[in-house]
Amino acid sequence: MKIGAHYLGNGECEFTVWSPTLNSIAVEILTPEPQLIPLKPQTEGYWQLKVNDVYPGTLYRYRLNDQEAFADPASQFQPQGVHGASQVIDHEFEWTDTTWAGVPLESMIFYELHVGTFTPEGTFAAIIPRLPELRELGINAIEIMPIAQFPGDDHIQPDLAYRNWGYDGVYLYAVQNSYGSPADLKHFVNACHANGIAVVLDVVYNHFGPEGNYMGQFAPYFTRTYKTPWGNAMNFDDAHSQGVRNYFIENALYWLRDFHIDGLRLDAIQAIYDLGAKHFLWELAEVVHNFSRGETWKRFLIAESDLNNPQIVRPPELGGYGIDAQWSDDFHHALHTLLTGDRQGYYQDFGKCADLAKAYQDTFVYDWRYAPHRKRFHGISCSDRPLSQFSVCIQNHDQIGNQMKGERLSERISFGGLKLAAGAVLLSPYLPLLFMGEEYGETAPFIYFVSHSDPDLIQAVRAGRKQEFEAFHYEEDPPDPESAETFLQCKLNWELHHEGQHKVLWDWYRQLIHLRKTHPALLNYDRNSIAATSDEDKKLVVVRRWCESKEVILAMNFNSSSVGVSLPIQQRARKLLDSGCEAAEYLSVGEEVVLEGMSLVLYEV
Image 1 (cartoon, helix red, strand yellow):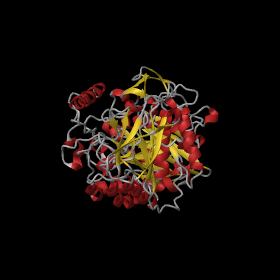
Image 2 (cartoon, helix red, strand yellow):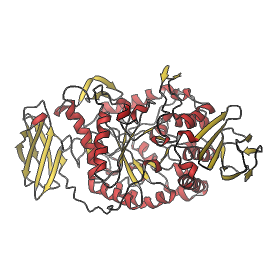
Image 3 (cartoon, helix red, strand yellow):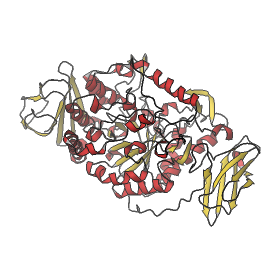
Image 4 (cartoon, helix red, strand yellow):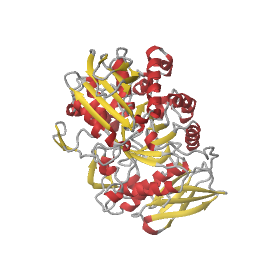
């Protein structure tokens, strides 16, 4: 069932809210003239009423049991922030993407961005002029970090009042007011489609943020049966859970239908607990796929998960949930440790060339193997799933933010290492994801930042952030997440894009993406068409990929000095790419190729 305030036109609006345990609910119209109008009870705990003389822009809230009043849990806009009233929205919009056919999931080059730090303005509108550059780079899918309304501090200048990664959202239907209006988001999506770019929205269905969270006043959205790192879990399988499930399923449809979003990235699904016969993720995927069948282009779901469990992406007929793809952190961890030498925290489970070779060959490094950091066996084989169901990266918001000072790789490894990292990801058989600015070696950090108004909550966030880094044995304190300066440090320096080595790196990324999109062997995601080997002494990883008569061999040197290697070729090979300058243009059978330190070479056989 649709929930929230739905403007029907001609001054009529239908209000629907789910509250199965309350005795009365009234909609309190605040503008232009105050009114208090009782809603009528419906089946399954819903309350509903059509009200006349209500127009777009009207502010309202719900009064519960004739006592306190709160914003709509399914509010579509919160112009006054998380503690203010909701606003009625008219979704009428002149879309120009009628010929948009989408981008096939297996062809996507993802580009993750945070709206607030991507541009100086930090708005949807400010991204649009940057789209041609992303298109020229070869990007065909933008993945936006969460945009649900999160808290802010209205006591400081407006452009700094709202600072958050987005994972503290409390109104999941409401577009973050500091980024723009619902219409601004539609203009952005429309512009992306005009540039041949799909839009993926990061959504958080495992918890609500701590400030401005009034969901429990309306209904049993939470359960004490399970705990998450953020408090009580969402109620997906306890009493009254059907209304909770409907809230999130309707939210997914809302973004896909009303905003033409192409796909959703589901945050940390390991914290979505459901022991019912039909897991929430299964139901969500089923509904989204049914919706997609009636549309002119396919919509999809991508899960973030650290479970190393292919059940997530298996179809229901094989006992899975039917999610279209999932992130695979093992690839990142294996590559990151070879590039940086990090061995603290969860990185202690990685660090060998054999780990990266296994990540290429088998996707999961831990497929029911003992993981020293976890102190238990972890994961299971995903050999029955195509490679195109997994997304990998070398940088994303979490992995940069997990560095205490939010340092990007550009601040930690050599220029050669950056080129090697890019090639390792973009020449992999998986769906590649770039993090904003990675393509030109952005130097600005991406640090965890928030803007709360509760002093106790601010202290708790600071303490939690400090504790989080204890496992990595950092001796310093992390940057203050509440500081506006922390947020400002994270703004991209777009002028770097055209300067010196930054421009060279950008050109390298474009070259890699073009090759990935055009070479038959790099377009083949069959698990039986890839083979990877490693040499720990030389710190080498060699990956063969083929498609019918076309074959490429990728050799990667993670040593700081040059090494020689004999590649497994049966005929003369021609060089396609070289991130260094020492590899020969042509290679004969049995001939050794020399790889510069921290470099890669790609040959075509």
